[in-house]
Image 1 (tube, rainbow, N blue to C red):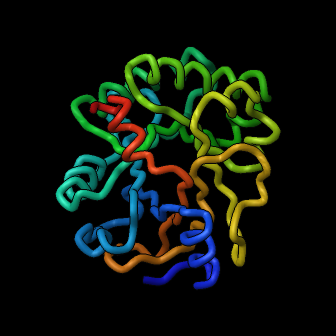
Image 2: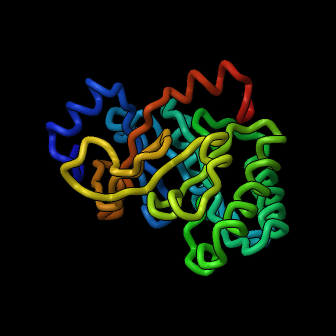
Length: 226
């Protein structure tokens, strides 16, 4: 196993902070040997799709990745990539997402990935309302939900109500760190986009830490298809 952080950082985080280590993937990662990943990660978050076009918005490798991870009993979560520029479009994305994941079970949360600059440039009120529209609809349908966003935009463009109420997956990359510099509440930290894992075809993969054992939380709550 190789990674972007030095060994002492892994030791500190995993032993002192009781973190769980994971990756997030999409079709960009190519062929994946999930049997090899089983001994390297505690969870995988995979992209299920993007936008609102019901005919072509599904992640092309989502079903395959999902099935292979399940065969290896690796806990999985998912994320939906946002292209919505209004709350109304975000609601349509939520409905499209729910249709795409129907019948599947997730041991980790469902995240709304908001990072497109043309969306972020619309300002805090609109960005927060976009997030709220998606999150409320998916939550209403029985899922534990959250936001994926960079530390800077979480701090500047997301209402405190959203950050306090929902799960937070913060992206803040950098080496030689035992925790993100982001000082708000966070539940999962994507600490690099330049990681490496045995069994993944692509040269790079996103690496994450979780400070919650979501598999226990979600199964006991009956959410996410359980």
